Image (tube, rainbow, N blue to C red; front, side):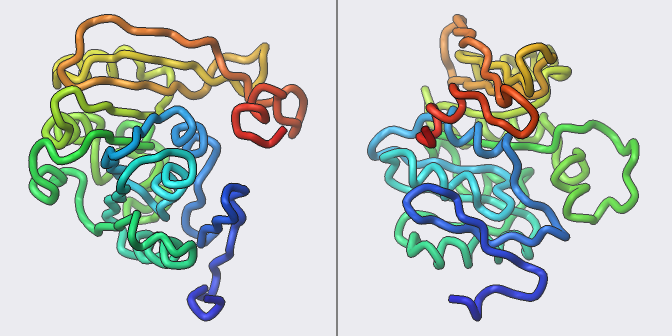
Length: 246
């Protein structure tokens, strides 16, 4: 498999079931937000899950390791990232469980068909507009800014793709939470569960984990905050316990 690692790429250990992932640090590598989302999402036995904007496939791979879902699909518009994701799937011998599709989120319902998935996950671009953008086609820019797709695109397509009662999971930034909830409700994806993520116990949250349900009734659970670090570069005990590292 070493011959499948291209120049500039590296192999990272995911510390679960011996799985590894191929990444290129000069392009875009997954962060804590993707790991937190994979732990927050629930995929039940026999369910089919779709990850919108999967990048190098980190979320489908982690979900396969952590849940009893039947199958996992990743949709990615950048062919270079999709290629890395496919090679990581093959590296971990998961071809029978995980499929990587190259395509545009804005056309997702046309690609997969209506009501075709039980679960959708997404770690979308957080930033609005083009402030600070140097190159709109740069992989890091596409991952961080709403250049190729917007929150509206993601929610519209998710509402079409999810089965009635299907679940939607997203990690985003707290500063957009009012907009997120308003647009989720407009698409008839009812917010059902939320958890704020704080870098330190005395710092404001910098991430929010959200679960919605297609056609769900109004009522949302707010879970206790998750603290990532108890000291500089030292993970909090709760985080380590949740991820089975302690």
